[in-house]
Image (cartoon, rainbow, N blue to C red):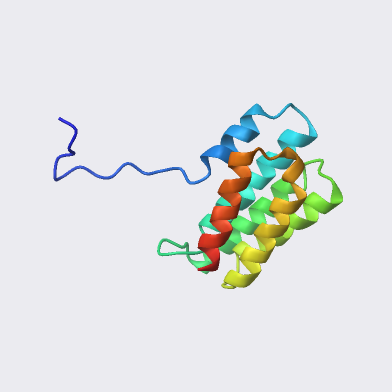
Length: 130
């Protein structure tokens, strides 16, 4: 019996599974820190757009906390700058800025991303742009 009962809720799907797996597989140090910060920033982007977008006030609080947390990481300047732009864009109602910032993050973290994780970020950017 494969069908769900009529009262059952749909199982939620984690949207950044490949990125989370790439983060878990990365060696300790710079690559893992960059991917962990990318995962956090991408999750903020997911919550900033679409039918289930979080309220602006909550997104602003989350962005401020993410900025504080990223301050404790050792990241290359280009990666830190791109991630902070994405975090800031997640707090605004500006889908174009969100897509541009996510594209920059994908570009600067490309050396650490596998094919599936990069594809996942590209797909997210397309969804955020629509």
